[in-house]
Length: 574
DNA sequence: CGGGTTCGCGCC
DNA sequence: AAAGGGCGCGAACCCG
Image (tube, rainbow, N blue to C red; front, top):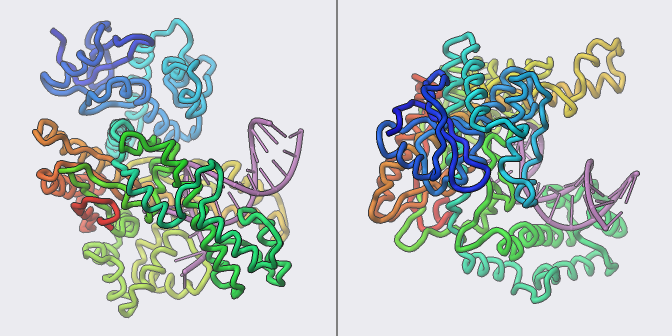
């Protein structure tokens, strides 16, 4: 018999199917000795099935959860993810986050760098245990126990009880995100290669027999482009050659950006726009992409939880978070199954309303269409202006005719505007800002010039150095201004994912099959579910969104609606 | 020749 | 319709 424990530290063996476990209390202190089990999956299943499921404490999803899948666990504490959150919170942004690095810091030993991401996938010589970066002779489980206790202690040092409990929520949500990411990477997104091929053939012509050859439609456009620009041969993919070809026709371009080309009267401009569209589709999501990334009817990208400083996820390989709209018809539910697609409408302005507690903006955010309500209240019913102004306020836009819109917002929604402007000022002055749950932005660094040096350098106003310093200060102000909103939106989305994942486990034993998350992109999710359960999944989504709102923002009138649609294909849902 | 940078565009 | 924030990625390009 095993002891009941609120937490269990887990470390798989370097080889084989066994591993070591150690029961822990909620304070991280061991409740008993470490035990070795020959069958780690069976041991984990036993814990999960009998008694309250513990919180598994492990080095990382990659090292500990991936080997367990498809066995699922209810909750975990992911040391690598939490180490990142804590380091940033402590003002030590970017230090190595592996178990070995955290352990070495704790013991006052030289800290190893993290291995670059993706290396283990490319090189067989790098086993998962090596990625932990522990010195030889140190038991992984002992390091897990020590680092975990230290992390709990560091969390406890957050003095303000509200901030401390929010940070604990962030830790739990980030860890749950790791579970979701691991599961989604394994399950994959349903992807119909026949539909994808039909779409490609329709747009590009038949797949070229010779690898590397341009598809017919692209070759044809390249020919027309040459003819339109004087017949001289040039590479339409080359920025500089395109500029030169246009110049030879007497058209001086400063850029080959699509939006810029739209205003160019020369007939070659429209051809180039179309060429670029199709060439990009072919290069980024064409047949070669499909060969690499789609197998067995599933697109299997990797997700990197917390891969973006704001807490958004990043993708690794395959452009998981950039599926082009024209290809969304290829995402099709299996026969007898449905896609439940849900996205959070107008999430970021709603997050601003909740963060700033601006009474007027909150009233608008209590409505179904925030921009419409905002327009009625302050912009004479002009929805476009309301949207433009609010987006400009959140992103720090200064150009265009936005000045009067910002002035209106400042007058009508002083608390909301003060909130983003305070964040911008903090960033300009070199300070740091945090999300609602405590995710911390990076300090000024190589990306932004050293502001203090510029400010204190005795430069006269108007010198080039001063201009550059001021420009970079404003750039960082725009970053921190957006950070507080984008990262708090990510907090909510992460809490939502965790809540939804937990609700979906209620259907784990459904005879038709288990509904599962197959896609997550910032403010949008897709659940693949048996048709009979799609309605229940919709309910679970709505409830999870509501739970996340309460967890992250407490009692707020601001709605953060997540609207589910049941569909056969992703394209249909939008 | 390979690695790093720039540009442009896909997504939110 | 773009512009402000955040990304990944591919092709071209630059450099040692």
